[in-house]
Length: 388
Image (tube, one colour):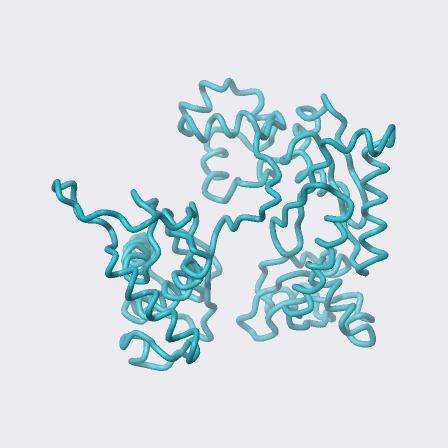
């Protein structure tokens, strides 16, 4: 609802008066970013094609995403939260984690639900944005609790009740479980958190691998060792493009993949980071979304290496299902800080994925683009044909 709220605040006499409001792309190939609660009653959901959303809710009004205003409002919300909590992490433009550990003496005997409600009221009074707060002793519990806090409410899970609280949800409600994992779980007859919690840890490890099995066993009990990170370190960098017409030509897809790879690589270098994991995402003409990833043995930062890894993943996805593509994206994750230049390999340990020459060329290109604009230097392959 964040995008809907911002759209209404920016245009109180237009979008602000529309109960059936959709925010997102207005073309036939557009996608809904957010929908008002009244529109959701008709079955409209975020990520749904605009055309389908208007079939379900014909009287809805669609407005574009007010991107600049969303950034400003998000920053305002974050500023209020940082005045109220010692540790705040912005997980996304419309999601924050707060860690109130250590504030017990300052808050005295105040109940956590009372504290959360006070935070909720102060955010709304200061920014005009209504927020929903979920509370708990673990991040995953707080995250899931927000589902019961919407809209504009508070839901706190008391200490010791984490497992029983989580048991009421379906596995699809857990953050971190995607469609592919859900299918694997369903094959084992696991559809609810209670189903997974009833399986011994050793069997989950046998079925889904040691790491994933342990992760599922813990989440089913509301156990989450991850901490709120106030440094706001970027977890991933991605770029994607929805095409006006479906693309089914491999060469054309590679050309567009090259431009996306260059974009995320430039953003990576701008943050002085390297990435070990490259992911390619495609959405087929029938809105089926698929992705494939590869974790490299070392962190990389150059267009050449990222594009090479992405191309291999694109070929893998296309081999599995060859059909028209409406969206293509590249993501970088498993980010690490740029390391000092490595020494020349004298002992035949094998070639590096990228050389210092690769990095120097990439940074020189960045400098030219910073001075003369993003289009100042482009690969010839990108300039062969205009995009449509």
